[in-house]
Structure formats: C-alpha cells, structure tokens
Image (cartoon, rainbow, N blue to C red):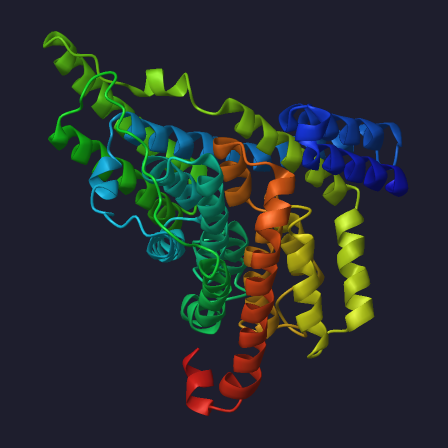
Length: 442
C-alpha cells in the first residue's frame, strides 16, 4: 500500500510539473490526485473506515483553514487593485533600472513577509509587479525572486511562516531567540540569489501602459482602500496572537470590514453616475483554480501523513544521522529540501512529534535543532514553485510554468538556501556557543 501511494503521488507530481507539455491543467491533476490517494488508502483497509473518515474530516478542516485564508487574502488584494490602490505605492517606485528594482522589491518583500506572512506578502507583491513590469517573462523572473524573499523573510519571524508559527506556539522556540538566531541566515538566503541574478540583469524595464478603461477612482478613495486593506492584513497576526484562534478568521473579518466599506462607497458614487467595485464584483474574478489547486495538493499530502509515510521518513532520518551535531543539522537540511516536494507543515509536525518537549527531551526549548528547522522548512520550499504557499499563490496568479521555474529559479534558491544554512551553522558553533552573554540573552 505504501509503495502504491508513493508511486501515485510521484506520478501525479510529475503531471503537475509537465502541465504545459501534457496540456492538462494542474488543478485537475491535483484534485484527482487528492481523491485517488484517499480512495486507495481507504480500500487498503489499513485502518477502520470510521477512523479514515475522522482523519479525512480533521485534515480537511486544516486544509480549509489555509484555503479560506488564501481566498480572503486574494480578495482583499484584488479589491485594492480594483480601486487602483497600488498606484499609491507604484507611483513612488520611480526607478526603471532592473537591478535597483530587484533590490527594492526583494528587500520590501523580505521585511513585509515577516510582518504579515509569506503567502499574503507574495500575493501583494505580485499585484505590485503587474503595475511595474509589462513583459511577462521579465515579471516571472521578479515573481520568482518574490517567492524566495517572501519565504526567507517569513522564516525568521514568529508570525511570518506557518511552520515558524507552529514551533513558536508549540513552545519549541521563543520570540527573541528565533529572531536573533535566524535573521542573518535568512537575510543571506535572500541576498545571495539577488546578487547572482543581478549580474545578468541589464538595462531598463518597460512599465505597462495605464489602463484608462473603466472608472477613475478618486485619489482619496484609492488611499482609503489601500490603507484599510493593509490594516486588514496586519490585523491577522495580531488577531491570532490575542485570541489564539486560526488566522483565517482574522482574515475573513478584515475582508468583511473592507467589504462593508466598499459597499457604502459604491452606493454613494453610483448615485453620482459612477460605478465603483465591491467585494461581490471582485470575487467574480478571484483566481478560483489556484484555490482548488491548493486544496488538491494539501489533501494529497495529508493522506501521506495519515498513512504514516512522512512519519516513517522522519524516523529514518533520525536513525541515519542521529540526534547530536552535526547529525541534526543534516536532518534539518534534508527536511528543508523535502519541503519543496511535500508540504512543510506535516514534516515539521512529524519532527515536533518525534522530539517532544519536557523531562528528558532530546531537543529542549531554543535548541539549535528547532531554530535551524524553522530556517530550513521556511526557505527550502523555494526550491520548487509548488513547495511553498507563496509559490503556489504566485504560480496561480501569474500562470508560471513549473519547468520554467525549475530552470530559472531553483539553482538561485538552492544557492541562497545552502549559503544561509552555512552561515547559521557557523554562527551557532562559533558565536552563540562561545559568547556567554549572547547565549544568555537568547
């Protein structure tokens, strides 16, 4: 049964990667893959049918949290775009130099991702890219760097990436510690690909022509919707920290407030002969296939988790490399690479389950294993475009080809991943272990 599930998963993954040559939409493949894996698992009678149903409902709930989060975030960002709100930002980015624009967008993405989260930031930045870069292939290149920067920026913040959030809430890491120990490594992970790519970028970018069709939104309304939309996104981590409720609830609440506001605005301007967008009109062109693709991929991976395949994989790593340095560094590095193929959430969850906290814990609170795991799981997903939430969101919005990303971005991502990992290990071995006052601080 295990061999069958793994084989089908690999074949499905290959079909997703070869979407364009096969001319089969990746969303259809992902949905078919998710349903087929669960059906085979159920027919194998590895566990009782009732238990499978319980697992399916539980994992569907976890997947739905991400799907509704993505739906809310994409609707907010699209609504800001419909109100021309991003012009407030793009009008201030005056440079057309390719290198300068690359650095500007990468740094902005890196720190914005730590404040929001990598998926939301990626959605916002792609919306900006559409206003800044006309040529699609050039925009894809910058979108690829947005994925790298968003994942790197989310890795060092307690609220920037779902796996870091898991470790933070689970008590494996503390706020100051995770920032101090992983910030520099994450920054290096972002900077190295930018430097390498910068050598090949020359000349000026061509900006898209202003779309003069439709209603010209007054400047004060553009600013209002932009500010409210950004505040709605910032509200999400604050809501989660205060209430300890799932982030998607905060996202949907923020959307609701913006929805009501745009309904009132639209009514007022309709009386004056104008027709401005509302969330209803925006939802009509939100990228639903991307959301369904997310659903299919996450349900596929959840089947591998319930079947015990991911747990066995983690156990095999433990037996092979051991639990002392440098063994646990290799475990984290491999988990990071694997997170580009399967979702990093179940991999990190498996690691947390294998090494529980408490008396006799192998890895206690703020052990380098947990900090390095946050870095690797957060940034390793950049190696493939469907290896992270940010990548999947950008792939859906820009229709980026899997093979194109593999050729153009994967090596850049791998170079940043490895160099950042070496920086983390070097700092941990030389600095934090030898400077007593700094070790006590974190």
